[in-house]
Image (cartoon, rainbow, N blue to C red; front, side, top):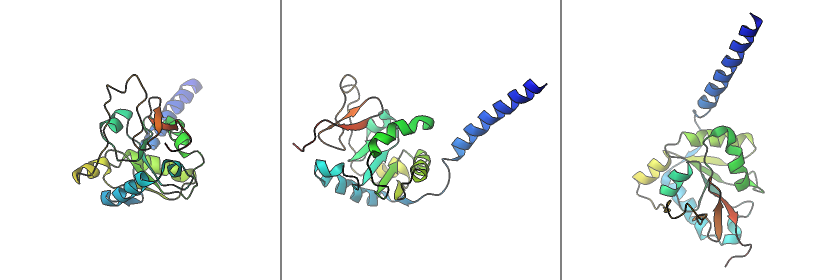
Length: 185
């Protein structure tokens, strides 16, 4: 009888944990409109390469899957898929290494749902200046703003260039950027 109670409590705990993770992606968070993020994107891509990786340079983090990112993303955005959420830290931490906690961070996804969980995760780790794109990439696209697209088939063998940071390449499936040189060419 005790084993059955322990087993049911364990199963309930797993279900409860999964439900809490899902509910965590709901709620009100700081947002900005697509046209405001366009200004940030233009500011990022106009920075010299060496300044883009400075601890205080603003960053746009696209939490959609690698395929969604390749199909079209905001210029200057870095990719760190939020799916699955329990391993997101391994994909986003390399992008944030050495980043000042007060740095402007902008999180985006397709419809502003996954980005809520990502924003809350960043807040819990001390990043207090984080906003999400209101309406996600759907809002960006509805305004017909510039997107960078990658040829997924052509990039399957070699690591694609990270359009968000010239002189860098993506590493691995998740599309996180790694420097391939230390000086601007």
